[in-house]
Length: 101
View 1 (cartoon, one colour):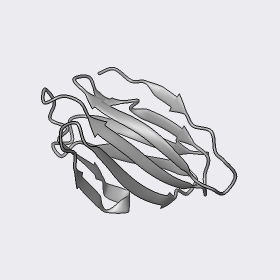
View 2 (cartoon, rainbow, N blue to C red):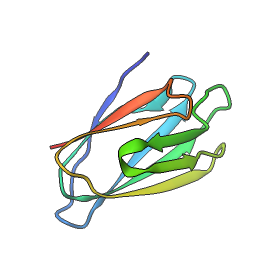
View 3 (cartoon, rainbow, N blue to C red):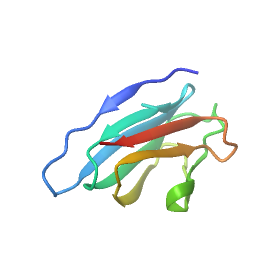
View 4 (cartoon, one colour):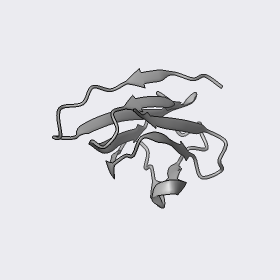
């Protein structure tokens, strides 16, 4: 599995939008680094049908969203506490992680 990391800049307390694509390789980037206690919105677009990631689950936030092909899906995570927050496809095969520092 290919892992890519992205460091995201925060804009004070205005919040931030983090873009993630779902490709044949899975979630890209699959590892995100964000500042803690800043509102975060995930902006996700699935660009292929050749993946099992047709939805995303974020267990700790009780989020389960469908990811329609070539449509942008916004997921409001609110303020993420310091630590790690995992996400995965519905089959739990493709995974990623958000690290709030």
